[in-house]
Image (tube, rainbow, N blue to C red):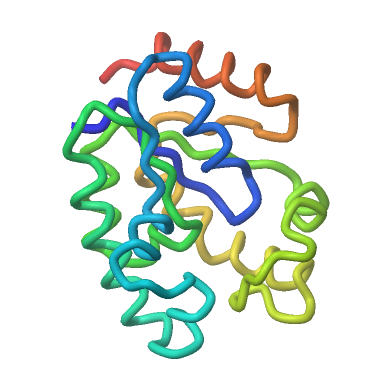
Length: 166
């Protein structure tokens, strides 16, 4: 089972932190979005646009099931919590929710190809937060404020892992 799975809205630092923690712990980082790109030969944006969100979420759930099998740190896509099956998987894993202010997220995602954020990322992020917060809370053992520096946030995660009873 994965040592740690990171969930949260787009732009909260899941991939970057997964890589940092994996390096600290001398294990592998796995990104479910990167697994999908490798498997399909298409970008996440193209998958969403061409196949639709329902198909994308099913493929994402399959990637999650495969990703958590080893001693790894897993970075997930922001919407992985939308499917009940994925939430069940996440709730059984050591999952932490990365979160930060909407303004920070919008700044971080500028210039990226993120179809679900559309032309008004501020509004889209607020809507995603309203929809997904309860699911992030449901599957996570801790909520980590991820606006700080990479080292500070990674330290917070390590501290939370020591405090949370598994």
